[in-house]
Each structure stands twice: as structure tokens, then as C-alpha cells.
Length: 154
Image (cartoon, rainbow, N blue to C red):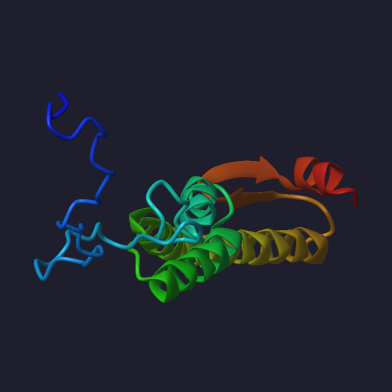
């Protein structure tokens, strides 16, 4: 509206109120936990040595020396990264036990075959000393010297 006594409108005057400059509030802001974007500590990242531990676990039933070495390497890699590796521990235990059992069985078989070979050699020598005649007993079986000499290639 216009004033009837003063027909010209008043000039525009800026408002006396001015908005203060933006200031950050003193309240602490919520910060999300910091996760590395990449690396072994990132969620879903592979654990070092885990795959090698699984391979060592599978091999521990068939190739104990290889499994023992791979299991130790996998365990060391996992420990350096700060993770546990049950497959590597199991591979080390299983391969160690089976390796010791295998060595004991090999020694027993070697001793048994050595004893059997010594007995056979003794019996062959007895037949040769008798001129190839007579009978000998090998592991509870009685054989003629002729049969023993022909089977052994004499």
C-alpha cells in the first residue's frame, strides 16, 4: 500500500538481521569405525595360509613329509597375520603321527624280511652242504632240497 500523503513508495531497506556465519557445533560427531579398504584385515579378505593349511590337511593322509612342511608354513603365515589356522595344526599333528607310525612299520618290515632272507639263506646253505638231497624246514613248512634249490634258481 501506498501512503496517500506521500505517493512515492519507500525505498527498499535491507533487513537488520543477518544470518551468522556457519560454525561447527561443539557436540562430538559420530565416526564410523575405520576399516582398511584392502589387505588381510578387511572383512571378507582371505586369511593367509588357510588354503595351504587345507591342502596340507588333505595331503597328511597320503604324503606325510610334504604335508608336514606345508602345514608348518601355513601355520607360520597365519600366525604372522594374527589368525588361527586349525587345518594347519591338524595337518601337522596327523602327518607327524602317521610319519612316525610309517617309520616304525618300515623298520618292522625290514627286520622281518631280513630275518626271512637269513633263514632262507641258512636253509639253502644246508641243502648245498648235503649235496642237494634231503629235506629242510622253512617257516614250519617241510620242503625237499631239490624243490628248494629249483625254486631259488640253483
